[in-house]
Amino acid sequence: MQQQSGRRVGIMGGTFDPIHHGHLVAASEVQDRFGLDEVVFVPTGRPWQKEHVRVSPAEDRYLMTVVATASNPRFAVSRVDIDRPGPTYTVDTLNDLRESYGPGVELYFITGADALAAILSWKDAERMFELAHFVGVTRPGYELSAEHLPRDSVSLVEVPAMAISSSACRRRVVDRKPVWYLVPDGVVQYIAKRKLYRNGPVDPPR
Ligand SMILES: Nc1ncnc2c1ncn2[C@@H]1O[C@H](COP(=O)(O)OP(=O)(O)OP(=O)(O)O)[C@@H](O)[C@H]1O
Ligand SMILES: O=C(O)c1ccc[n+]([C@@H]2O[C@H](COP(=O)([O-])O)[C@@H](O)[C@H]2O)c1
Image (cartoon, rainbow, N blue to C red):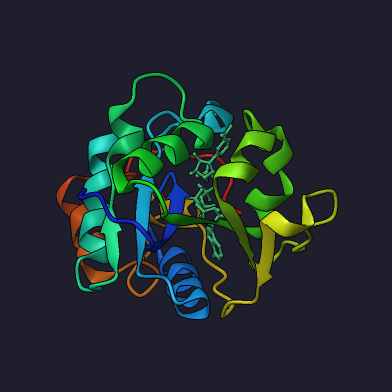
């Protein structure tokens, strides 16, 4: 990534196992609402709050994210979290991206309502709010609220409702049901080619 000052860059962090249209719509809507130059999708390396869940290899999740975002010139994918050893902490993601973009970059970290509700449990949460502006987006089944969060560091945005989760997509593959139109076409094909999710066990869908 080249040094670029004065840019407004969105960050869509996620386990993306698999990436689905809920992620893509949220990123697209926030890009438009905040006039972002780009949105960088950052697949997690080791999502420490999902250690009870079986997570697919990082390289598969990274490649599905590349496939899903390739057609949008404002979308990019970063390896910073999958290439950093140890558990994935957003404070490290933000520091790494700040360093690669250089001074003057404005970072906007995008989270669904469920993730925003848990954000105070994240490592060095106070420091995170100094490094980026946080954008919480609506998600069916969850209440979107910024209560108890620093007012100047968080915005709430309504996005088109997509009742899709990665866990429900994985469950559908186990049950031999289609995931067409829940995930991009190339991701359907990638899941089939790599035989992902077929053999469970999977955690309950949400
Ligand atoms: N349908 C959706 N609408 C809005 N935001 C979403 C949606 N699905 C996921 N997100 C947000 O995208 C980010 C990454 O989510 P993640 O990769 O964990 O997907 P997930 O569908 O929540 O996965 P899982 O079902 O396995 O927990 C989180 O901030 C999450 O809140
Ligand atoms: O920094 C933390 O402690 C932390 C704890 C849980 C989740 N996150 C980040 O939140 C984003 C969504 O994570 P997940 O587990 O819901 O896919 C992703 O970028 C994670 O790295 C970060």
